[in-house]
Image (cartoon, rainbow, N blue to C red; front, side):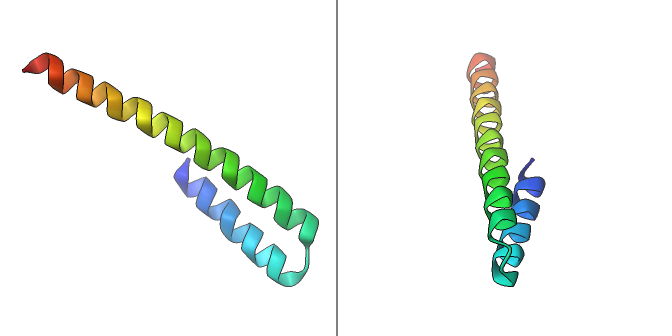
Length: 57
């Protein structure tokens, strides 16, 4: 998920640099959504690991 967010962010930067504003905005929006999903999944996984460690001790 993070890999795709970075790829779309790079596409957005290159498209913006080349003057494709609409494409740049769309790629940036996709990158933001993918990054937000990554953060949410990461936090859920982190809380699950903390919960497992807490239950084991």
